[in-house]
Length: 427
Image (cartoon, rainbow, N blue to C red):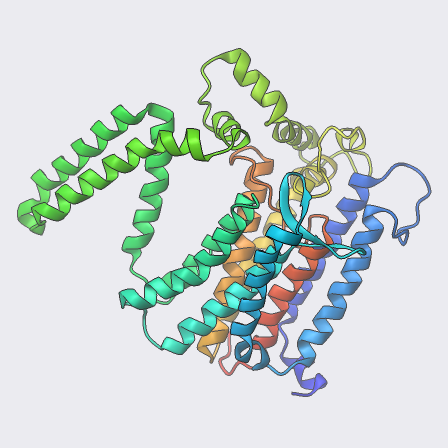
């Protein structure tokens, strides 16, 4: 496909949204690191200068992606996946530890996080497998293999420990649901989360009694009309109660103290006010300061480079995981609302592009891109405004981080390259 043809067929709305988010993100990185001195924006010794450099690297990567043949990504997807898994394994020997997680390779000029690459290769490998089997994935064997593609990188990342990055991979399950996985499994997933959280909040005994009562009532009221077999119902009751009984063991013996503290703060599990306040000042400090920064911005914000909490370094890691708080303080509700609208339009546009693909692989990879970007967006903003526990994953195209920006760019533009080969038309 010629360069002129690619320029005609690329989705310029998605490109414009990408550029807008990158530009707004960089301007907020500049603001969060601005010291008031006459620094050049091209000073690569500063964080904003480094980010600007990687914006240039990302733009170069876009040109390379667009120059490659469209079938290159499908043909070599399995090899890419294997290489990324080997890189994840290599961290246990050669990895560099940053902020308590051995998730990086030190390349000298930059730190490389292979989990970011693995997100792309896992989305590619999953799309390749699902498109190859050419089925609506009703067979248990197909479901198991698809889930294993997602599970393997997650299991390699959890021990680093980096549970936030591992969680992102499970978002790819929605690709399998799009291709026909019964919603029954999604129900199991949500029920597991609900049981886990309610057990922590109310205790094992009350949850076990509640579960048993609900299941018995369902059986008593619906058995005649739905003809529910008694053995599966009893088995379901036993399994759910056993899971509830295991929650405290997992919480106290498997979770690290910092994870327990985050759940205690999020769910208000600690009944001692002094201990809860201590947790809030330590584990919850970032979120507390982030909430205050956003709240202080009001409707219109304090103005660009005028954020007093941003300038006072009240919010740790403000240029990375908490970059959204800089936007809230300096641009107010207008700024945060604008960014949320830009992300929302991008997600809707990518769904439209995915649905119009002529090729199954392209459609499935497109939904993989949507899943990864959305889980990052949802968790990051939820964490910054205090409705979700602190997990520590960046806001796509926005947060400081060279490898993050580069791989988010590759993730998106591989799909936009695949979209240039479409036949269907859309709005």
